[in-house]
Length: 291
Image (cartoon, rainbow, N blue to C red; front, side, top):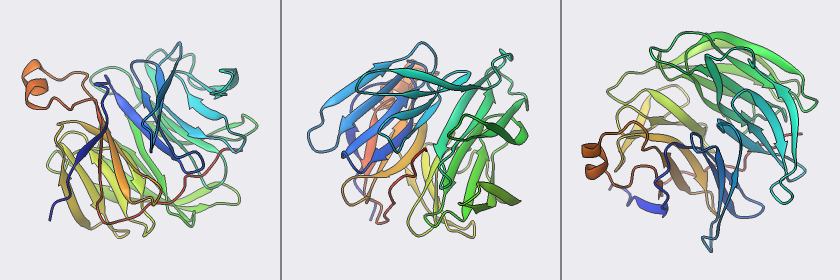
């Protein structure tokens, strides 16, 4: 049986992405990248808050001290949602107007992993993947990327995933949570528009990789060995990122976009840009925190 897909939050956002579940406060956070915003929705009450930034918000993660680590267009900052205090941690590719920061997540090593993307079409392979340590030290992990995306780790912290949405590959690394060393890079998936090019992603408690097939309107679940386990057709043509959320971590929320869709597409899929949710029969785990 196909699970019932519901609307968790209406918003009609241009480009909703970077869903992050905060199990301590029972809050779902997500970004509206092109709107330069971070949003927070309380799971039980539905109370909605948002914060505006001066640049695109590519992604963000939770910090151990209650702040957020945020990837703006060309810099990573620490942001306090209560006071709105903002502290610049580092700048990345700030001298290259062709790129911007995109998908990022906090890893099991307590660092913020974030990539850049070519911000024009056709996409050039001028992006990269970086590791940002809590002290602001930036380490380049991989270059030659067109649209860095799909970051995720297994619950034990020993495997890392990373994708390029344009070239449609997903790779795996062996990961050392103690040092943040990512080694033994190998191809995990090579996708196409049939299942959808890989956009944002998450990993469940069993080590399965969940990927938004942004070009096919699907959310796909792959086993640790890379076999397709199931594919869920979404009621929007451009899902952007899945994230396990909720008190029992058994609800998959999926962000989506409206930007670039035609009037006909929007008429056929009026939920585009909303935050969707369903229970797939799998569970996630609490996110790692920065610091």
